[in-house]
Amino acid sequence: MAGFVLNDYQAELNGGDLLAQTLKHLGVEVAFGLHGGHLDAFLQGCEAAQIRLIDTRHETVAVQAAESYAKLSKKIGVCFVTANSGFSNGIPGLATALADRSPILCITSSPPTRDAENNSLQGMIDQVVVSRPLTKFAYRMTNPEDTPRIVKHAIGVAISGAPGPVLLDFPIDVLFTPVHKPLISWGSVASPFPYGPGPHPAAIEGTVELLSAAKRPVIILGTGGNSKEAEESLMKLSSTCGIPIFDTTKCKVSFIPSQFAYSAGPSNTLALLPRLSIQQPDLILLLGARTGLFLGGRSGAIIPSKDCKLVQVDVDGAEIGRTLPVDLGAISDVTQFAAGLNRHYDTAPFQGSVDTKWVDDILGLKHLPSPYEQQSEVQPSGRLHPYHALKNALSLVPKGSIVILDGGEAPLWASDALSLCSPSAIIRSSGGLGFLGNGFGYALGAAIACPDRTVINLHGDGSAGFHFMDLDTYKRHNLNIMTIVVNNYCWGMSSNGQDLVYGTKIPTRPVSHLSPVADYSLVAKALGNASVKVQTIGDVAPALASLQGQTGPSCIELIVDDKPIHPVTVSMVGQTDDPGMVVVPYYDNVPRAYYRS
Image 1 (cartoon, rainbow, N blue to C red):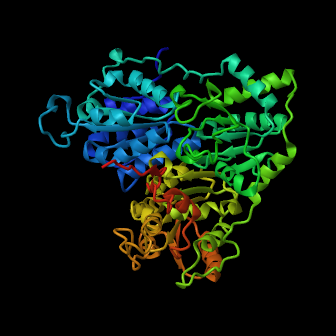
Image 2: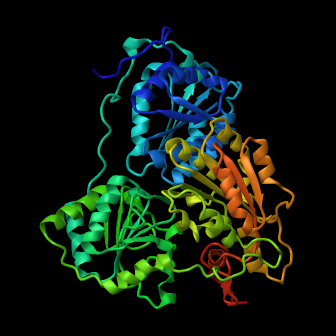
């Protein structure tokens, strides 16, 4: 049979029913979105097909919940937004999904096909045209019978190669029109999805040669390796060759136990090596990770710019060598690449001579104490030191929690103490776009994908302001999400960045401060979340205990100081007194131009 058995549910099958049943057949169990009358036929079809509907308070949250759900469930994330207005609110989610390689299917609707270009209700924007730069595939349906073929194709595009978002626009008449069953175009809806690409034999041979010659090799693993199969293969490879495994810090799903002998932690610790008089790596296997922001750009701090070979493996050939020269590139799934190396070493033992003393030094980096450990818990302002506030809070959250980090400096301070709660997954919401506010959607998707885990939704007071109303969503669905708001009354990275750039020369700090009277714990309580505000270290433990003793969502507001400035902010601003350089905050500084008069 080319298709699947349809169920009329004692009513006439319409386009919305066929769409829902197609998704159900393809393994979809949940969809995130907001109601819109254009979508009612589809939503009724989802109810009948037993697809769980999670409704949010803003479309961006819905789309980004689908993102997080996809990352953690390893399934396609599905969301729905209504015509034009809802679609416009959901655009940021398409952008983050594209930038961060999240495989999602966004369902939207539009006016009837006969009303195109007629200034009809919610028909002013051509959604397919707008979506194309932000998706891998965008298409407007013209009849309900093509639904199975097109939906299967769209999901295949989303999950293949570099994963990403796809969008299907179902005009309202297509959703409400009865389906003529003999005309259904099934396409490959009953066929399995294709396997991912494997490595060329020469790529395996070349990597083996590089590993044999290396004294100081490391693996840096990106989101392309966030699967149980990939990380099991990598642990075997790591043990065989004695290679430390680092992660890129953007999104980590921990299938590698923290106690694994060669688990080395976040790759940004490699930037400490010169300062600690430790040699940099002479070989890096960059697996399923893109160069750029999260790997030190072109600075050479993490991936050395000299005396280091680079092997880059990615499903997208366009990413290989995009920023840095590579000595060997392979278009391959990370699991297949690691498995290929393991098969080689199963028959031909590893012949390398890795410097074990250097490896021990590298593995010891994750145990370095924070430079702020000895500083006072209370700043001169009377407010808490952000490191100590978060250290005390994170040490008390359940082990194995999923941690979502959102904001500027708040997640940086949290990162210094994250190991205390041994998280099972970490998602940094800023991603490739430097986005703020998507932690709310990411936390929602994580809670649905992993209902047995506590989800920590951590924000600065800046990012908290974007979608705080979705704490109502957490309550309505009774989700185990603890929101932590690190409140320093300002946009921390912005304000501190201005301090670094302008110092005492220019005293103004435009639009970088927030209200000290905003009470996030009070708003959370009004939205049905158990909540507490903490202003002293001694109150952290009882506050966490009281919240964890209750079921459902909760919120803790930590009142902290905006100082000290986190060292990552200092390094990103790149302030210098060199008169020959122009400071370009958050990027590489550029030489000052001089003109001959």
